[in-house]
Image 1 (cartoon, one colour):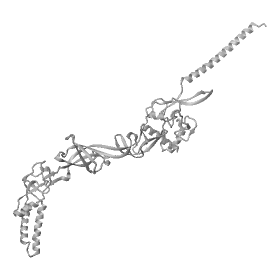
Image 2 (cartoon, rainbow, N blue to C red; image 1 turned 60 degrees about the horizontal axis):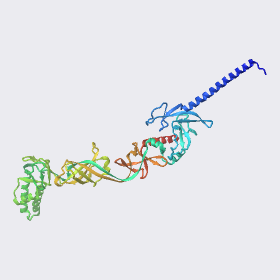
Image 3 (cartoon, rainbow, N blue to C red; image 1 turned 90 degrees about the vertical axis):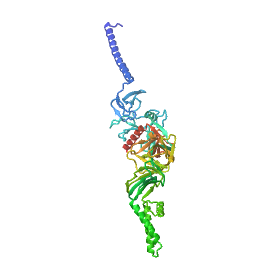
Image 4 (cartoon, rainbow, N blue to C red; image 1 turned 45 degrees about the vertical axis):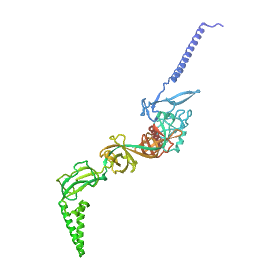
Length: 493
């Protein structure tokens, strides 16, 4: 067949044009596919917001630090993904889950490899809004929070009980301790001061005005024996009363046997009254007997010490006028002394009369004095906030001297108590509580009543029993989770 050269050339040009068009389309299609694949593998995803991994409700429109110090985590925009030839969508963060979702292996039972079942997702600000998939709340824009199937077990637990997965416990630094029942004994160390026994102090006065003639004890600190002469006193009243006594005695001798009863009784009554007056003025029986024997009035009468002790004050001097209100001597019996120890007011309830207390003094190394508490004073020192307790000590050789200071030790036995570490207790001012750990990662808030504190441990009077486990570290973060749980439960109702 003869073909025209012109037609052949036209055919060649048409085929070339079609090839160019097909090649350009093919290049554009493969280029777009390549760019799409590069974009999907480059990780360039749009960040919707940044959130706190420990508190997903805290959002920010920029990266930074959360209030608890952790780095904010990005939450990315929904991205298409190929799954078996079909396109599905999922919101994601760096952890691969929606904020608030537990990672695989972070179950209430803390079983590795297990996954918690989500019943539905809800808006934390409006819990009545529920959906079967994660996302953003339409009203407030907050991330929806999952409701897990194992959360239903919390319905039987007290309000505020929370489930904290094992990985979150590690991040929060949660540590626990077992509650124990132990004997609680404490040593109270304080200071004490030696003072004179106030029940063995004599204040010496005269009961009649007069003049001191001689003084036999003439300096402070002198040791005097009971019955030892102190001074002599001239008193016109004493002289006249002695004369009356002698007259009455002679009258009683003359008229005591008179036939008239009234006369005899009058003479005897006068003698008794004058004798009684002398005794009331501290004239001794021996001095009256001597007056009976001699029948002579004694100008200066001698006064004697009523006790054995040391003179701690003296105002008796020769040739001085004295009255009944003048304290001439103070004599203290120091064979026994008191020690007054200062106990802080919060320790007073555990101190009782009869407890033994030991004293050591730097002046006598290696020597210990022991006594029993005999009195607890009823007032508190407003400056030191202490209460004085007194113990009585024997003082052979007068080694313990008033105004000495001593170190006091008091052993207080509180008995057997339930003890927890002091850091396990959260004190809000209105109430005190601990978090009790149950199986399955449950943390139950429990109100407690506390007793004494000793060496980092505190006695629990009610609210706990031995064998239970409590949180000792990280309890503030557990408490924040519990408060959030309670507030959300309140919004639901």
